[in-house]
Structures are given as structure tokens and as C-alpha cells.
Image (cartoon, rainbow, N blue to C red; front, side, top):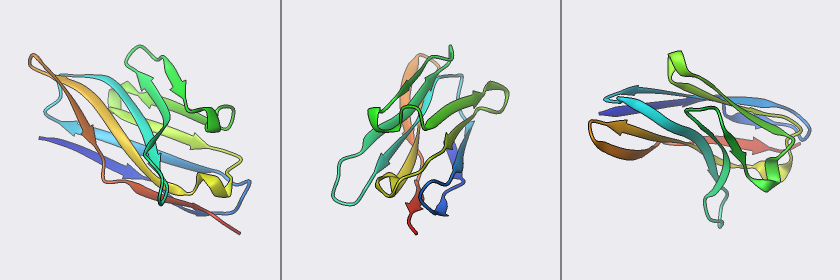
Length: 119
């Protein structure tokens, strides 16, 4: 079994900052990548940011320059620092884990954490 514990969501004013974290544990041999996706009401889930085991990062166009993803390999934890938040960043943010266990590669989603940007 795999567990993902997400934290850090909440309500923030436009221009403010939040930091999300996601800690992975359980039956994991190695982590290939961890990332964040988001889904706003009535919209499809979209990539926010992803970081590979080698440290390569990729960001959605709408968050480039404002969000930063980082990772603590020792803690199997990924962080998303979100700055200069806008109302359009309001969404449920989901942590995603791409991992290897024995000879298989698997994909696992967290339950999501709400981020609301509003004055």
C-alpha cells in the first residue's frame, strides 16, 4: 500500500503565497517522479509542476515564474511554493506519485487539497 499525505492548502488573498507539501510512504522501491496537478470547477485536471528523481522540473505555462517545485528525497516529500497567487489559481490541488515497486511502475494520486485565492 502507498500513502500520500498532502498539506498546506487554504484561503489566501491575491498576491499572497502558500506552500503545499506531499509526503509519500508505503510499498515504494523508488520514486520516478512526483508532481502537482489541479482541477478547478468545470475544468479538466491540468499539470501544475512535476519533478523527476533526477531533479528535472516541468511547469504548466500558467504558473511558470510564480510556482516552484522542490523535493526532499530523504523524506520522499515534494513541495510546491506558490507565490503571486491569482484568483484563477483557485482549484483542488492533487499530488501525484510515479513509483516503482518490484518490476512494475505505478501511478498514485492524493486526495487533494483546496487552494482558494480570494479577497
